[in-house]
Length: 246
Image (cartoon, rainbow, N blue to C red; front, side, top):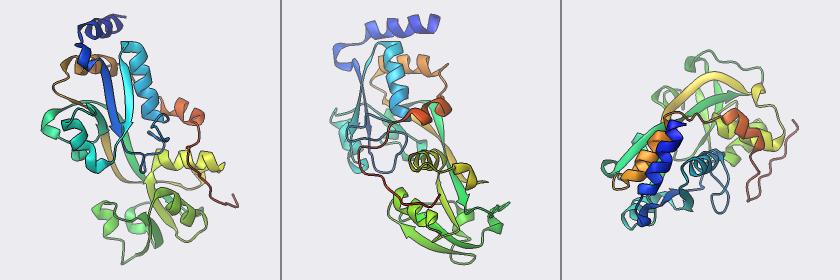
């Protein structure tokens, strides 16, 4: 209750120019975190909507290519972004609230394959072109693993489900969401191998002191309930179709 009163008090102290949290994001490869033609669906969209209701602060997700995010912040087109410390635009000018959740890239394998370590990976692996993977995985590629490149997660999953490769590495929530859309059991393919994980923060421009204070108060006690959100998320606006034999 005290936190709720604090957030309300912060809201009334906001100058008129800063009463909207303008969160920019790219819809390229961020299922199920935020997606849709207007970035109006996804786990992080639900989180920000809950923050909006609790704090009484207007929020707006703004589609923005990643290579224009610095420009958007500098030009006042946005004042916030979800990012990791490694990929935070304008890091010296952003305040990181959180972490809000953890991004985790997991190895998924064809049924019957259960590698105990990265040294056990043998055969073929489908990966996303231009993505950076861990050193422990990269050392296996080209020696113990033949690599097949995909341009996006949907193509990579399509190749995997049609058994063109023995393994893939995907964000675990992305894999589960796509499996949900395809009505397949994601547990058949899950392994215990994590290729990489890092915290995701809500970065807000340091000039937005009142928004930062309200966000800090909210996320101090808020936990993202992905298990409750994931089954209720709507499908993407764009066509998503992979033929499977299940």
